[in-house]
Length: 205
Ligand code: GRF
Image 1 (cartoon, rainbow, N blue to C red):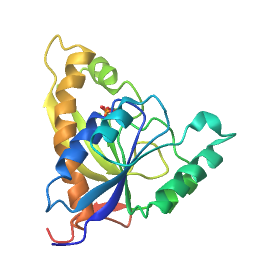
Image 2: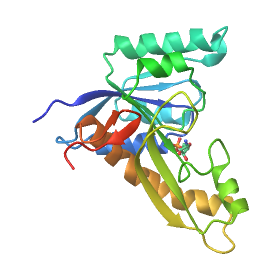
Image 3: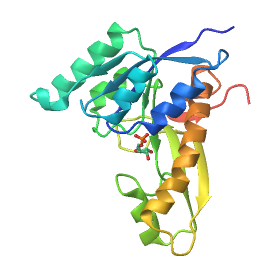
């Protein structure tokens, strides 16, 4: 059995993607183990869910720090103290500085609820409805300093139906998020997907 990469999940909210990663990592042959769930919001619902699953949790409340760098240093300290090798952002709602991102280059993933490079930022389902696209979806990408712009590891698409609401579309996309994030993390943890020269490459493929 190959080594399992020590992984942290960073959340700010309900943590449904976190749960999908925790469930996948229960398989004994999954190449990552979830060692820590870290939230910047003490009231995040995902923290309670992680505790129920017996996962170590940590809260680094951004409001308790004078600035972004101090907040990130505190998070970095927690991650390094836990010997974390991979970081998964899963509904983590703080913009990260280039300094923090550089420290985790090629080892930090994010899930974004659109088919990047379309619809960066927030309210992606509203953006998709306003643009009138017929397909929408989600993306797992390596994190780079520019927001929602890193090399793409995995994507999945869903149809946009006439009369769709934001909520209906979000629900359809979320099903795919829960499917592709565990697969993308497995690919990165196992070395099947690698950040190289500013792109995601698949050395064995
Ligand atoms: C997801 O749609 C994710 O793509 C976005 O924020 C949402 C988080 O949901 N970045 P959850 O906390 O994982 O349920």
